[in-house]
Image (tube, rainbow, N blue to C red):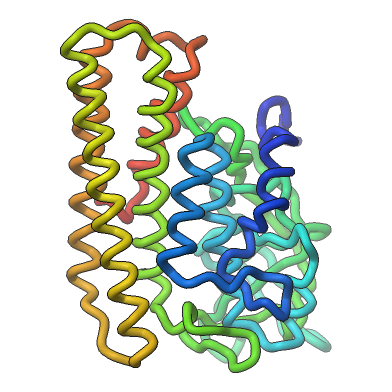
Length: 316
């Protein structure tokens, strides 16, 4: 049983998400998506992350999961993503058991940390089919049981729960292969390999989260050294935001021309952004004093959310 007190996004934030169609930034227009370019999509993730940590995390990972829309069959994409509030949550772990049945598969397993579990319509994971092929899948929420296992200090409102399924029926149309964009369901963004897409999305999110720290901290009375640390962090966010946008525009242009992407350049930016912004947030924590340790102050929640996000494996 999940304790849902303060577990999910506040209603006002969900209203904001659906108003801006943030979960469907990278979904084809024919399924009600926004079909944004990479640079424009990243700006939306960054904006949401600056407003609120859990909101930004849900938008980052929700829009990221809905990016999978371009890898479903037309039938599957229409069924799963056409709803105004459609969003996936999930994990990359393998199912424990998969059995072939009429029209699809029966899938059982347990997975960890699916951000946005309380508002998700489908849950994703990976499975090894009886044929031996590794595929991804989407399970309808009615087959899912949530597991309260989020013991981390931040992202308290992101409902990032584990989940499990027992003999959940997964239609053939709900099986997809992440390396094969499907004509009719996809657009240019889906030609960007998923890992590179994820690196960009996490970079946008971490910059936005740090900007949220800056925004809330401007309401705090500061000593001179703390003000300097705050300005340093703000300048870093602005500079890295520009760097990210320029690289995203370059990558988007290369995709249009079917040119080879520089994966090392993208990976290098992610590591540099994560490390340098992390140290500037730490400097601010040290210089700002006890306000950063005050559990009742809004800036503490901002700090905690940032510190959880920076632990993502993409930044390591």
